[in-house]
Amino acid sequence: MKPNFTQKVTNWGNYPVVEKEVRSYDSFRKIKEFVLNNNEVIARGNGRCYGDSSLGEHIFSTKKLNKFISFDRLNGIIECESGVLLSDVLEVAVPQGYFLYVTPGTKFVSVGGAIASDVHGKNHHAEGCFSEYVIEFKLMIENGDVITCSREENTDKFWATIGGMGLTGIILTAKFKLKNIESAYIRQESIKAENLDEIFRLFEESENWTYTVAWIDCLQKGSNIGRSILMRGEHAFQHELPQNIKDKPLRLKKKFEPTVPFYFPGFVLNALTVKIFNFLYYKKQAKKEVKSFIDYETFFYPLDFVHDWNKIYGKSGFIQYQMMIPKESGKEGMKKILETIANSGNGSFLAVLKLYGKENPQAYNSFPFEGYSLALDFKVNSKLKKLIEQLDDIVEQYNGKIYLTKDSMSRSSLTNYLRNVQSSKFVSLQHKRILNNI
Image (cartoon, rainbow, N blue to C red; front, side):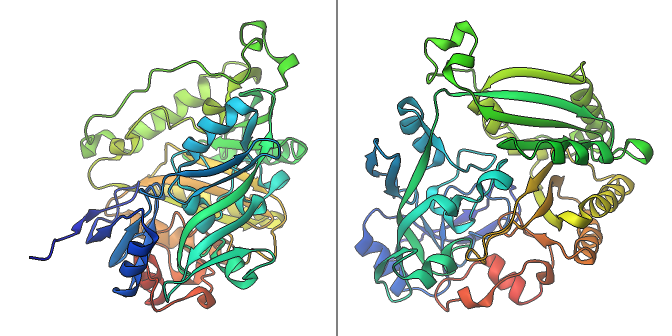
């Protein structure tokens, strides 16, 4: 009897949930057999994206491709299999005085996923996307062959795969650069902004900082619309550190990491609780400006220390809506977005505003361009689809764009989905949904 590999699968937002075939191998030969024997194959890393991009009829999980191949400590170059998580890289690299050049807001994403999404972080305006530091990767293509892709070899496949959402093949291994650091700590300044005008001014004044990001209270109206807190930071040098951490600058103390044990009931998260949370979050910083040294996990991954936090949104799940608007119309567009959200009552605990620098024209599938993005988490409910349609209208009006890694609901005209990365073999649920205008 043929074994049944079908199982329920969903990504971090727990929406949508599908029943599909899932396989995982650490043998390139077995991966090739799987690719050749199936149509509509898609690779899936750790499932920490919010959308439906790694869901498809036949899913190959890279979780067993979890080995390091080499670490050039002199030049800060790591080579590993694609299922290695960024958290694994940090465990190896930070004690040796290295850090990721670019990291998203969670360290629990795979290296292959970071390339396929061409992830960005709080430093795009200064250091670009993850792809800027990728040297090469090995890619299994439609006929099962494994090719090496770099800026010099198989260049077309290299750039199509960067941000290509898995539609060019399965990334098997990757080699990329790391940055030197003297400590595992960030010198941070946290500044409160009363409204949208002030936060945009602070972003412009902070462009010489490597890392900038702002939390926004998305339910404010009138003169307080855009009330927020800007966090800007730099990797701290050893001599800057307080005495109690200066002796072991590359070591972090173990922290208690709680787990959300069950899905919260649907009524817990509502407009009132979101409003209360946003009020308390803004008020917890009593001073206008606070300077501090914090460890890199607190700065880059504030949610990672709470395991299974996605269960807070209940069994119906949530989506993350991340859009971008060009810099010249960023303030006006963001104001309309925030007004629409406030009027809808669908508030977000986590509303994050970021500034982006110039795009890399070679990485034509990447999300960022010069402008501002806003990322918001919304609980899935009966009113959400209407809100997303309204937000899509505004984004389109301002020549904006939707981030494919987060998308599970937006219309295809906003995705800038480049059809030249299509393959009859590698197909995702997102790909089918967008091409069919679902």
